[in-house]
Image 1 (cartoon, rainbow over the protein chains, first blue to last red):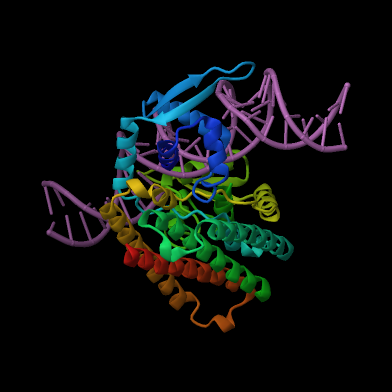
Image 2 (cartoon, each protein chain N blue to C red):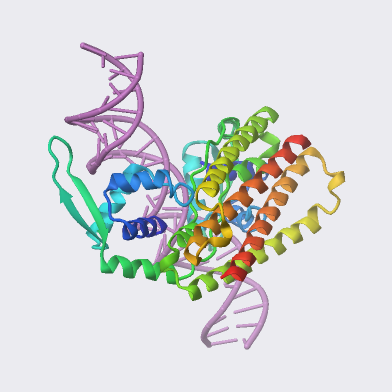
Length: 175
Length: 175
DNA sequence: ACTTGATATGCAACAATATGCATAACAAAT
DNA sequence: ATTTGTTATGCATATTGTTGCATATCAAGT
């Protein structure tokens, strides 16, 4: 459901091909929702079948046709319905917590490596957040209401990441 | 994969039926991994087929047989393999971030309701954490290394929840 | 008497995600 | 010349998770 919604909202802002959308998932949408190219192409096709997206096929010489999708009125209505209804509680699913739960069988060495790798990937994420902040949100006071939305999510992302990092250091120190 | 691991670890500590396991998912495992009873029964059957679990059928009068599962040697080996290999980066998938991403089409009223509902459910979770802390971890200094594992995950859960709550209040105040 | 909730188990259909494979041209670097 | 990376699209299969339905007993409350 959320994937459909993300596809609809990004194509509503700017129509584009599956490949265009894929690039957006790799950049601006990277901190919102992950999807593989296979999943994106298939989901776009489904949304087209359901007439939530229209599709204009642009023939190209010597390579596959480029299919440009744009949102339809039904697509907008679908998106607004999704936004209006509350999400409900999200199920808890944390593989790392599962490993901690299995503590007595988790070798010290493996745990240490796991935490170091996680810390590294969280640091990468934090740097990515910092780059976004410097580029787009250098002056928070001057942001419009609309611009504040991504700024808020960025700040939450930063704080959650920081919370994780602080905790990892404590666990590494502890054992 | 993680579901298999959680089933194996809990049955390794204490053999039991699908129903027993379900009760554990509703209590002690509630903050580790969510699974429905349908999924649990199906997965136990699969693990039995794969001989990672053995199964003793205990006939009962006038009601379905009780099937008691216990871990096998292959099951232990499987679990240890899973614990030894690093998890790798977890894909980002946050429906709430997706809604923030769709800000310009998200009505103020719906956003407000969404955040209030989320705040309430996070508060419930925080109270649940506090109850666990008071019951099991009243004196952190006296914990053994093994007891510290669930304590660590509890603390991370508390802090992440608190980070969310602080952020929600800010967003509610802001707009 | 009747309903509700706990005990105890599942099947079937569907949706979402992951993984492996496949094609084909072009540009840039070695 | 050949490899590597980018552009551009998908299909097939398997795994994982969701939702609706189904059965049957017993205890406790109304």
